[in-house]
Image 1: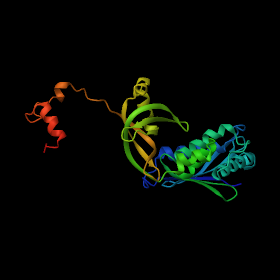
Image 2: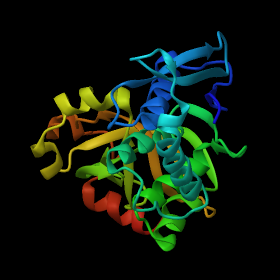
Image 3: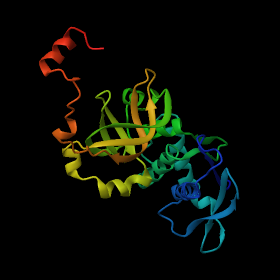
Image 4: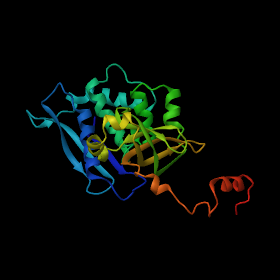
Length: 280
């Protein structure tokens, strides 16, 4: 067994920008994944970290009682973790020996590659590696959550185009999407219901501003984020969503009244000419 290595790269949308919080949390979760909760005497010692992008970190297990390398003590646990990740990467469900308390950690690593991080490379002891890009991350998350092939094809594989933009409509539901907060919006233009996953930056804002009454009353809103289209150009879902509420302007009948609208004709004369297509 050798020191464990992880590399984090920025997204293709912003190839020169790697959020240090996201990168560091990705590294921390990786070594949390490798830490055996049953042996508190062993920690992962940072032996190398790059100072630029892509960010790379290496760690080695150390026994705090002796300050000696502890590769033998963590070997079996690491093997279980890497075997589980390899199965997920291959589209297979986790084995029963994969620690349940580590499943949520692995999912956090995968989710960051759908929201900000472009690629995460984890090197295995057998010489292979797990290269996590957004498409692989979505597929792996689906496997870990037990999503069937038919549902996966609808949710993920049908994405033919992605672009940042906004949609407008009425809020019809507030729930979760693959354990992430989400809003379902009935789009104004098409009448289709679109699932919009909330960005981490917007969660507190939405939590403090959106009420149950807004959902019950189907409040109008504009959702902005990464819009995913299928091969036919239809919107499938929206990621990294932020919300802006649209409140209708109060209009009185006086605001609508236009005495010059008919050009001096009576209502009857105007409608008659309109039917006869005599209005220029």
